[in-house]
Image 1 (tube, one colour):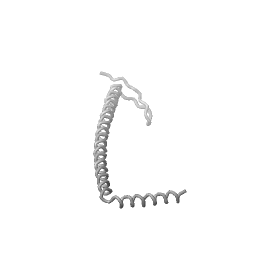
Image 2 (tube, one colour):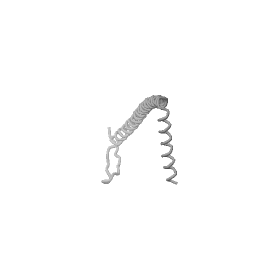
Image 3 (cartoon, one colour):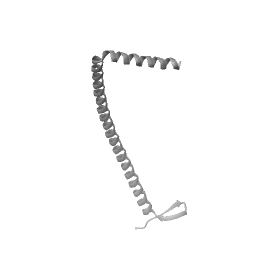
Image 4 (cartoon, one colour):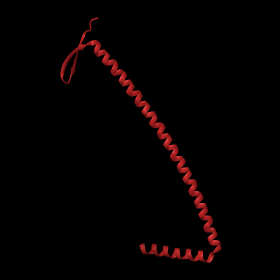
Length: 110
């Protein structure tokens, strides 16, 4: 079997190689290109799956924290109502003092 010669131009100049080698290089190049494309697809799929997992974890965390904050707010509200009912005059005096301070602060900024 006689290979025909193929001329290849590269940065070092021109070389003559058997055509069979060129065809083999083309097949290897095509296989490598396909493997890289497959790998890129797998990396993309893995990244998408991981992002979905992170989104789910973040959503669960936010749900848990929101539930906890609501429970704490409800507890604080109940404690405040109990405090005001036990000490109504003190509660009114504190509210009036806070209102006076707030009013003075707002008026001084104008």
